[in-house]
Image 1 (cartoon, rainbow, N blue to C red):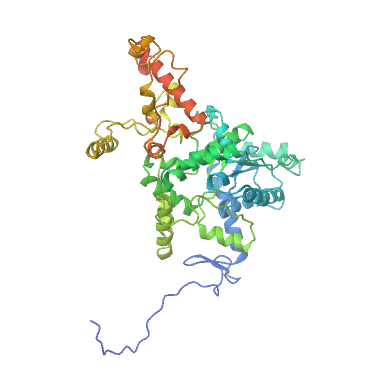
Image 2 (image 1 turned 90 degrees about the horizontal axis):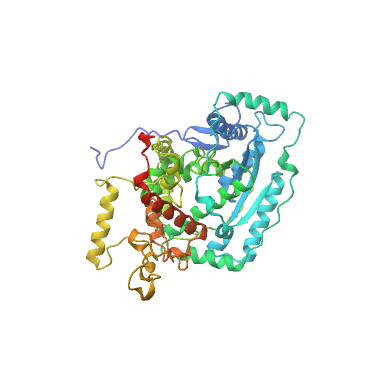
Length: 503
């Protein structure tokens, strides 16, 4: 044991920490300019080469984007998405060693109306991003989030997926692309016209704010905003002819998203929410080429090589650490990463091992087996002896104990039960209610759809926090009614249908 009066004559050994005074670990010649991790000190040139190689290796390893495909880059103005835009611009330059061979476009979703920005602030931010996009030479689209209120119902319907091309055809596709584009010095995307700044309609902004404010918690607001943003991105990609959607989620962001998704009950959707590719929408495949970069690497690269960024406030700006589940998880991961540098990488490597469990269902039933909001496979079709059913029973018992209603209907659903039948004096019904179809005159008084059976467990929690489902966009409510009518029709003719094994 150590003694109080004991003298220590030998000097204590100190750990050999990396510093910028050391040589680069790659070239062994130039002095190190940046320390990414313990023992990984790079000079300026080697760090740039390392950063660029990681981006192109991620795309080349997966071979999802074929030469000549149109790819839509979702740029929010943050460090990660702007760094992704810089990498695409670098890969398409004439001096690039291994050039990228897809045709890029840019989209920016203006969420200022949802976070309470004024019209002047939104126009200022859009002007800054417009100048940034013009410098790239790529076609760009600046869209206000209010446009999500006018989307068609086809957005929440899984489109037929494009048949996957075998990896053996990738090299032949590259050779064919090089031969057909040998004479073109510039990509065709640079010849398109400029996109003017969109006009923001005040009535649409008020409707969007009512939708966001109808959520009681910040957790539900952020989840709802993310869903609406994704719907608008997919719709823009479809209407503009893009087959791929490139997102700028970094390794740090995905680590936070993984833990927060588990907390919100999205464990069954983790493979699609955090993986490199996401094909839940069928014809539009989302890719995440920045998922190998930590926030520290991106910040160093943007600072050293002057990558411009635009600061855009979000719903959780200037909020406390415990304001929402997402904000609390982010604070937990970043603080733990400061003391244990391998935290983010460990969580990230765990997400790489996740895979979606395939379900054997017919093509006609695939659209009804997906969540109405997030478009993931429903995780509520489970047996009685499951954690999901136990959760529902616990909720019902807690409602009985508190004196509330035992039903688990979504907000605004019970309003339709007070409507009378179209028969005279309401003495006897018209006959349709006995078959479970409601009154035959129900078209005159549309009922609020029951969204519970159409949502996954996580989206049920989000909708439950809404004061009323009537605030949801019309395309979501219309698709919900269509699915319910289709399900009711299927139940009526179920006796005449053949099972999959009998066909």
